[in-house]
Image 1 (tube, helix red, strand yellow):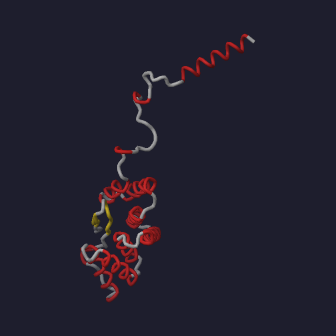
Image 2 (cartoon, helix red, strand yellow):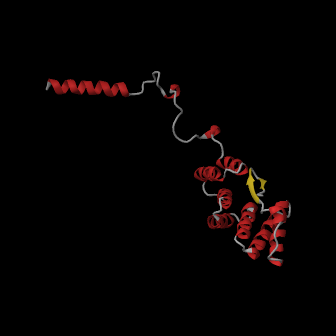
Image 3 (spheres, rainbow, N blue to C red):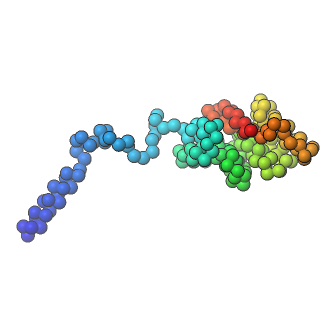
Length: 188
């Protein structure tokens, strides 16, 4: 019985040595960064990061940032619209359309989602529905955003003259919201 008692004492001593006692390797003194998600003041909004990455043409990275925003905020109309826009730039038109339709269903007054849905519909050649969607975005925006007005003009031109090709290889403009403001992202 003496051997098992000695083994028990050694095991207890080893476990006690593993316990954090606030010594040189206490949490705050670790040479490694804390693990887990960053919260609070140090965290950067995934939507802001995603918008900056989109402006830089880094659509895959933007998509990942938008998914992080979705994990933090939920799938809001703003997040759905942002994810849909990233998918549009990546050529995933079906996914983009589905996400943007969800965004306008979630918030019927969210202008950027309406505009971006119109862009997807134009890319798919669905000019009549695109014009209807751009009209909705234009009305909700009270005609204040030039990019939406231009998108509507192009959609109507395509309906009237299907062979219409925008000059200078223009593409349709995406509109998104950041901190309550519209940020324009023009693709060329």
